[in-house]
Each structure stands twice: as C-alpha cells, then as structure tokens.
Length: 199
Image (cartoon, rainbow, N blue to C red):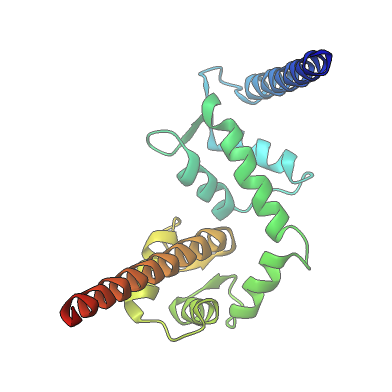
C-alpha cells in the first residue's frame, strides 16, 4: 500500500514538472511573439517571420523561397501572416528543415544534390522522377511524377526546391503505401473470390 502511495506521489510530481515546463515554454513563446510583432496587430507578417527564421538559423538570412514556403504552408487565411497559435508550427517546420539541410553533410542536402543534376538548386520533372524511381525501386509513371509535383510544389514554380523536398518524399511514400495497401486488398479479394468459386 505504501508503495502505491509513493508511486502516485512520484507520478504527480513528474506531471507537475511537465506542466511547469510547458507553461514556461508557452510564456517564452508569448514573449517572443510580442517582441516580433512590431506592429502590435496580433499577427506576424513576412518581414517579422523572416527575423524569427534568421534568429533560429544563427543569423543566416533565409532565402526568399524558404520564407515563402513557411508562410504558405503555415500562414493564416491569405498565407501572408502567422498567428500566435501557428508560431510553434513555424518554429518546428523551420528547425526540421535546418536539421535536414543546415550543413554540407546533412542527409537532405546530400540527397538533394544527388538528384539536382542541373545544379539549379531545384529538381525539374526528370530529376524528381529519378528520385521517385529510386525510392520506389521500380519505374514511375508520368502521372505519379505530375501528382507529386502538383502537391509538393508549394512555391508554384513547377520545380521542387530544397525546402519542398521533404514534403515531396513524404507524399510519395504515402502514395506508395496506399498503392501497396490497395494491391493487398485486391489480392485478398481475388483470393476470397477464387476460394468461393472452388467451394
């Protein structure tokens, strides 16, 4: 009985500590948002978000396409502003991108450069197709390439920029999983139909 009481006290203390940490994190984010919101209108415009991204990148100014991507994927309503509720998502998205592409030997950068044969800093349809083929381990239809391009090309320039690469890969892996699931379902249905016909 005493062991249960001690375990409950430990669990309660741990829960209180987590809640205190969460409250402190939220307070710091509130302070950061207020500091960045120079106009005081309760939203961050692109110029204010740019300051945030630059601070998270140790002073390295984000490229225009990187800022545009963050605004378009996270921005509120017309995608030109970020609310306080979206601040955490913007920070997480940018931080993950920096981890994947921040250094010369980072996995994302190495992968991107492998397929960027034209050295333009963006993947065209053929370069994207090569990447998708390698990920699938089989040939890929032009329809699949066009679908990924349409979904992942947030910048709308008909190419995949570095900051769009993770989204393109995630979409492709989801599509492959859905296709495999559909194929398995068709195989199961077909096997069941044959079994019924035999009976």
